Length: 500
Image (cartoon, rainbow, N blue to C red; front, side, top):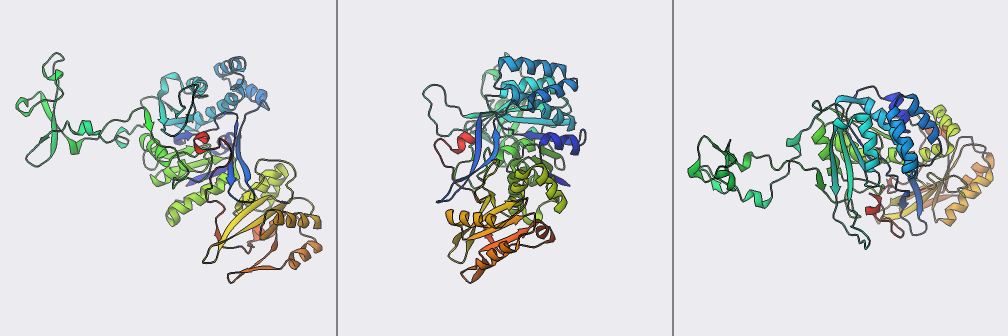
């Protein structure tokens, strides 16, 4: 069984994942770049920015977390983090939060397991000191560099065109490394060295075997057939694995035109994850991504026949991952269970009581809309979410505005939704509520009439209670929802390269 968890990975790791149960861990956590990452809802009338996550770690709860590290008897980690509080105060909060999580990741990793930490050059050296203490410096295997040759101009320093991937194992010598799975094709220069052809038409070259270092053959790039003997062997091109993998990978990032691009910030190429999974796991092994974002790791693991577990704190991510996996694999998708999201009315109400904004984001996302105020607190001015649909053979585009209320509801809430519909040019409106609507609210919805277009008829205003949602009642909306289609990034300096 595969699992997709909604929640903070620290809580999920501690309460849901057993000791030494994971074969391979890859994480791509926020980079501590002091930058907010946004997803843009592409619309001519509004640009709804939804904070997918905020990569600005604060000092809030840091002292509590530092004390927890001390109580876990991680004295060396506590000492080095305390030193960083003075030597690198900008990195200190981030490193404290990451240390707690990396400790848990080390716990759930099998003795034969491998750990990949994807980060940027701003934090890699700090994170390596933490990982060295947790995994042991002897279990550090590689600093893998992912480089990309894309546009960018810097007049004060070299162009910054790479990320860092720290590669550790739980116990050196037991870890899996399938080097034959990630070899690269020979270059044209190397292929030309296979300059001989046997009687069957197979290309080969002659290599020395146990040749003395000072011997004549050692000084030659190849050995001619007349010198074949017990000291030589034939290396056939069609039997050669290719070049062994290097510790740097040149692979383009996902640009605007990339087919796999979902518009999610920090999305990594699927090929990069496939390479890591092939190298450090076998079919049937379990792969964990504790910051799984838009699900690239899970997608790659599914395609390669691995079991997977994903964790993300964003309901947008959890919804996007499910859509992505079903779109890619359809009925062939392996069975998986979503944990942490409300499964009934009581658990949904509990989420609202604990975190009204998380509840709002969850419900809106479940209904196929973007949360217009994701991660933001304060007045929503009648608009909590927005969705886009296509209808008819000419693919007419229409929009629906969503409003969520958890407490007492009244007629003015419907007025606010109508105002938002008018402001943002939404043809349809959906009012979501925990409490039953009042009589005047039902009258307002009824008097709003219908949108009649292309032979279809949709109520302009619909009300759905939480109880109705869990009883199976559905909204009457167009079937072709294009809300989650990728959209171009907007704004000065906001391009995909900067978000990687």
